[in-house]
Picture 1 (cartoon, rainbow, N blue to C red):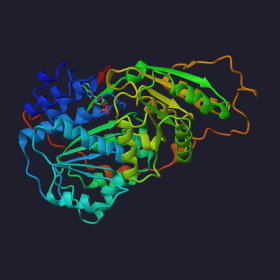
Picture 2: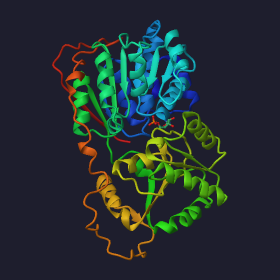
Picture 3: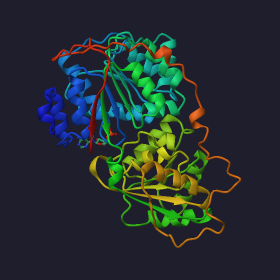
Picture 4: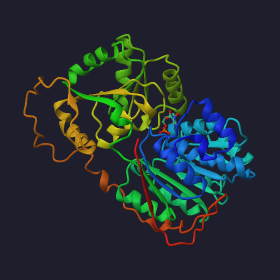
Length: 435
Ligand code: AMP
């Protein structure tokens, strides 16, 4: 299916897509949308930038448009869970954009801000609730939201939720969602814990993979610049002063580093602002807005804060510090080159960061071009003996999961039109999309 018209989407959605100038569905959309409209559970393995938000938002809005379910106070019809506030806000923006010609109500629920407004919105009744797990659990515990009317449940960026320690909250939330529901499950990677979670939640899912070698990352010109710690700033200002830089995100390892670097860039005459988890929600939104409106060219960010930032036209991603977790590299550079446009990703690598570089290359299955191979590090380049284990070595041991609470998804319901029988044995349909 390679155009939106043949998808038989609710007409007001088609109109909004035309206005957005979306001509063709991306591979994840082409496979997910028709199956989700028919009510199938979906296991989507796709990175950010592949168009996965529309892949779940469009079938949901299509359902709301056709079925016009009534809202009930405190009982949403659709629940979308996202790991971060920024991603939740972006998902909300996408629903609003695609659903601008239809009537539906949505609410956003996330931490770091007062709960009064969120509680009021829930009380009025919403079709779509977009939430981060922690705040949602809070509001559920206080009796402000019940999930018993949920018909469609979306889990977005499931792997990141586990990384952020949301598994206990997730289990509690999933246990409260009715068995008769449709679940759409998205994750950039499918490590065993995620497969386990998916297996317990999804019924006979259609499994869709946007092959990891093909996403937008391939269109990004990646390079490494060997550097000494003290030279990074000068090298960065050189890059940022280049004519080809329209909008850039610079990643640092720490919040403190992000603040300091943004100030130094500002002093060097490069308009920059920092975004990280220590900032209030309002300050983060202000920083994003300034960046979006090009009041600043450079956003200095940490990994968690940058998750889900979806701003078009980012020409450069610069890793001022190498990411500790190799998968973060893919997420970071995915901020540029989104949905078909090209981008440039440059990573500074000091001698101490060579291990991280190797881990990234192993993950992406290719060597990254070094801009200055002539630069030699003073001491040997092998990992030093003092470095007993990589900094992320504890990640895999972080949590012990008992997924028995999650087993409430044995059966879901098929919603509309082609009412497919759900009585067969759970199994899996494999599909692979390429970008
Ligand atoms: P996502 O992977 O959902 O974060 O989407 C990445 C970007 O792709 C967003 O800026 C979307 O607006 C854009 N996008 C999604 N679907 C399409 C499409 N079919 N055609 C053009 N752009 C799209």
